[in-house]
Length: 512
Image (tube, rainbow, N blue to C red):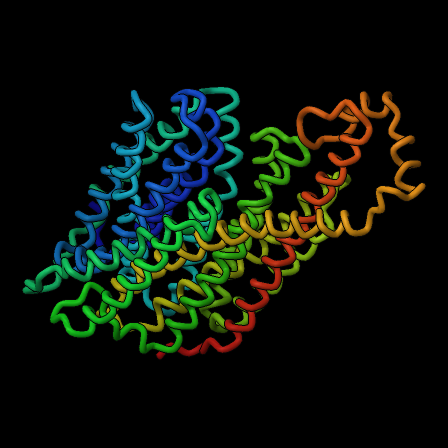
């Protein structure tokens, strides 16, 4: 075991946290590209297969909240090791799942382990690094945390296309074994909080579990069932009621699940808001860009994944320096500049078309990666440095929880906006086109049969093309409306990210 007083101990611990966090975050993103294969293998439809992601997301968001209690009750080492072990076993079981039901059950197990990795890892970083070095540490941690979403589609695409979908789960096993072995050998045992005999807040946990579970269910399934459908409206209503009940319970209970004192801290509130807004923008873009590449430009999963990789490279390069910059000048300026750069990259995609080149996409991804790299370290260090040492467990749980909520909201919101904007553009085209005009009939006459026959090999949109000229013309209108909706969606995300930059201006550079 490495002596905790050794000068390199904190850096070794940071490496273990980065590896374990990378594994957990990679899993969430790598699984998305395997959904079609899972559907085909088990014979389920898209509504059913969505539960591979929904079960993980809901479980993760619920289990992450009691981690502050677990840290105080049992310390860090053993909960951290148990989380790695459970995640690794869950991954192996997901890979060998004989039925779709078994896969969902094992995903829940995997999520329980994953929920313990991020908050415990952040808590561990805050324990071994002083506030003056946390920016640099968070910069290095964010390399793994933000590179994983960019690497996931590429690696997952390769595995799905050329190996077997089960390996998107098996790939976690060797990483988990390495992380578990390193933690057992290197991480020093830390004693729990002395005489910590407070009872667990079961009532508060029940309320917040219902609140989070139903909220995330509504966000994930709203587009499937319709945002005004009874099941979605009821889920949102009950989620709101249980959240109010949770707050009331936390105020009057003697041992609250979350110490609400943390929300009296100005910098923590601002950091949390920025954290959620950046999650909406970043994960919303990560969701719709592969859709555009695969559904509009016709790229396969691996090729689309390759175009996501430049973001990972930029994030990895910039994150290390942004951490050091944050330690020197504070979080405000890196946050504002980073959000402005991310917003600029969104606006660059406002005019997407069939002629959008790979070069333009790669440059845009590099720019966005620079912005993301500037964000991670300052928002994390600002949140952790702003609270008292005894509130670090709460902060370590709430940071990834709010990130998950923001990401889920961003994906649900922008997915709905895609449909709304497509309908808007269809109505615009319908209004502008006069089907009785000579121009319209001249355009129809230009669409000769040879053009129709060549269209499927020239254009990269869709699968089968209509065989008659009128239907083909309507098909083109639908295509152009769809393409325009993607441009609008990126612009919307750009404005949301600008809002985050405005909020970040008010963050204080000095810790309180």
